[in-house]
Image (cartoon, rainbow, N blue to C red; front, side, top):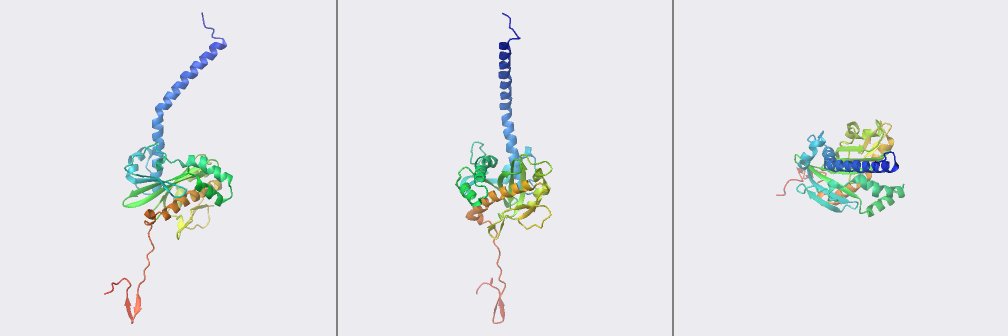
Amino acid sequence: MALDRDSNVYTVAFATIMVVIVGGLLAFVSMGLSPAQKANISNEKMQNILQAIGIPETDGIIRENAGKVFNDFVKRRITINYKGEILSDKSVSDEINLKDNLDAFNIDLRKEYSKFVKPIMNKYKGDKEKIKEELSKSTNIHFPIFVCESNGKTYYVLSASGKGLWDDIWGYVGLNSDLTSINGVVFDHKGETPGLGSKITEKPFQSGFLGKKIADENQFMSIQVLKPGKELSKHQVDGISGATFTGAGVNEMLKRNLEVYYNFFKSNPEFSGNQPKEEVIIETVASDSTLVSVNDSIK
């Protein structure tokens, strides 16, 4: 019996078979490409972390080479929660296991921001204290710290994520061993306006953060993005003309995340001890018309 190719049965059967075949082929191709896609994502993340250190050795490193040198600089991966409790602490000898959700390298602040942070901020909009209180209760918000070394110096790369004008923005901030001054930054975005908010990814904007300080006299200050042309303090940077909302997003994500990191470093003796202390010098004391240095040994 000949097939009636003009019948509805034939059309539906043919379409079904084609969908199954094409779907199967696409699934096969997707599975084949999945390892390469995951490798590209990991290498890009490594590239961003390395560039955020802010040293010549990692400046301009390409994505393809990031994985090869990552462990040369990143010696420790720490994950803390909002309260500053250490949840995971991996050394350079601990291989990155992509199934370990607490490994600092695997923390995805963008997902956590959308799922856990944004709902709280929207619910208590305008009430900063209530927002901080509710965020501190969440066990699902993590903060990765990458302890890096180069030429005998230690650097700390921290992560942040928030919302720009249209969609997610995120970045990495590299601190010097004083845990206060910025040595490098890397910012990225999902959908900011080309030529305006998208400029947060460019060096002219990012270089403005170099040398700026997130704290002053043991008090957290964060970094504030201002409208261009204003006089700047050591806690402020020039913004981008026409990108006020993106700048505000950068302000919010830096303040919310860096404060958690700063409080952790300040309260943790292991790290607070690394901060250089101000040297107090008392030159001399007058006694019987003779000048005696206070540093002289008593004989």
